[in-house]
Every structure is written in C-alpha cells, then in structure tokens.
Image (cartoon, rainbow, N blue to C red):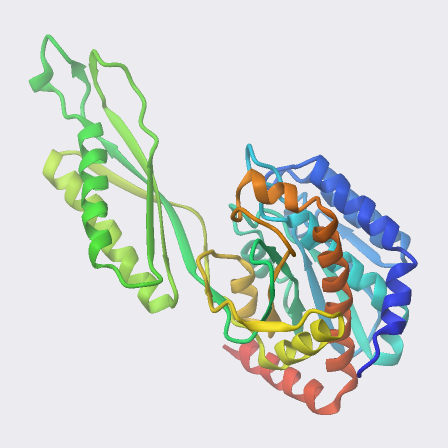
Length: 391
C-alpha cells in the first residue's frame, strides 16, 4: 500500500471532532482512575461512528471497549487519557487519545474489506496504577492479534521505531514501625521509625553507584510527625527500573535489602507493600514497525535513527509482552522541555502537537490496513500472536 488518500479523506471528515475532543481533554485534566469525563467523551465519539460500546469495562469505571467489524484479524488501538497531578497533560495523553480515535475513524468504513475486527480500548491510569495490566488480568486483551498506540515526545524529529524500548518499573511502599516516646523526657524508651527511613535512603543512595546503565532508583519519604514525639511509624515510597525483567528482579532484591538492613539496624519492624502492577519492558513488533516507518515517511516525516532506550516506562510494555504491539515515540516539531513538565503540557496543546496527532492517526490506520491486506504480514502477525498467547 502506497497511497493513504482514502484514509486521509475518512479522517478529515471527522478531524474537527477529534481535535475538539483532544483540546477538551487537555483543558479538563483528570488523574488516574478518575478520568470519567474523558471516558465519556471518547466513548461518545466512537458510538456516534457506529462502534458498539462497553463502558466501565472489566470493573474499571473509566475503561471502555468500542468494537466495530467481525473480521478474523482482531486489531486494537489503545487510548490513554489520564493526566499528571498538578501538571495536567505533560505526557501528551490528549494527543495519544486523539491519534487512536482518529485512526479508528479513518478505518471504520474499510473493516469488512480488510476482514478486520477493530477494538478501541480505553485504558485508564497509565501514569500510576497500571490500568492496562488490570485489563490484561481481566481478559480484555484475550484474542487480540495486534495492538497499537503512539506517544508524543519533546524530541523534535521522527525516529525509526525499531530498536526502541522502555524500562520495566515496580513501585512499593516500605513502612517501618518502632515505638513512640517523649522526645525530651524519655527518648531512650522509643524506637525511632524515621531513623529507619533515613538509613534506608542512605543505603539506596550508596547502591546507586554500582547499578548498571539503564537502571534507576527513586525514593520519596512519606513520614510525618512533630519534634517532641519519637516517631512510631515512617514510610518510604520507592521504585526501581531496569531494561530486562531479570535485571529488574536483581535490582528489586537489592533495594529491598536496603529496607531490611535499615529495619535491622534500628530495631524497627518492616512491611513492604506493592502499590501498583509492575510495568514490563516494551517490545516493538518488527512487522508493525516496518509498516509504521513507511507510513510516517509518506506523511512527510523522514526517519532520523532510533531513540533506542527511553528513560521512561509504560504499561503498554505489558501488552507488548502478550500481543504483537507497536508504541512509537514521535517528536512534536519544535517542542522543548521534558515529558512530565508544564512546558511539555503546553506543547501538547500546540499547532505542531495536533499536526503530529493527525499524522499519527493516519499512520496507525495505514499500519492496520497494510498488515491486514498483505498476506505475508498478516500470517506473520497471527503466528506471533499465537506464540505470545501460548506463553
């Protein structure tokens, strides 16, 4: 396939609605698991285009699935719409949502000819909460043969999607419990839980000098109290990141040893609780990636090498470990700042941001059409989907 004119025409017919929705999401940010208005806006647009809607999917009030077609190849487009607390759409999820919705609208009248069933899956809580893993656990991605989304970045070029990946990440809360006492009258009777939190942070800080490239540790203390009481409890929120799951597990054990050593040194007890699902590394499918690269060139975006390892994590990695997937990182022309900043949030509501959204929508639609209509690509995707489903 070398001509996307039909997809562009179909998208253009509803481009105004897609832009209005993306701008509304940006102006009305909602955080993880609270994206009720975003859920309704996206679902309503797809329903108006003839999709069958399942709202509040898998016991998640802000998840949905919109389905159109009855073909033998099941393709999904993932929609993200959660914002960052205090920042808004500093990760461009309004553009992610618009691009996936736009791709679905571009394909809507072509599914029968392509023998495709198209599912648009609204996935809450990507920033924190692992919404896609919750949907995986509840069977939402069962039977899906390929899955796509695209992600804007402040890197201003277009990059070869092949060779790019993201880190695994896990998050926990370590709670230390000691014994309270009056800080002046009888401090020796107390066991200071805050001391354990300090020791744990020092130990993790020393661990950083010997972790491998591509690995990260972050700790944020959550303890509170007053100066005239020896703190009875203290908590530290922590995460670690690595490029492979074996490296991630090694680093997790090292981090937990910092907590355990702190508890031993201070005489406190320790409880470590998982606060959200582990995000797994991102696997870019080669068949989908080659089709995406070609489609972006046709949109006038020449490729400039590969971004390689993104120092970030996404629960789309979890989908990619189970379903052939594509999650390209695409630059907004002229964008500055970094992801998760107010500066990038402004670029996510810019003319160039919405131009990128348009191009990503057409490119993703073209990828699904290319794979569905090309016998060799279709067979390769179906074979890989079977292998991943079999574990």
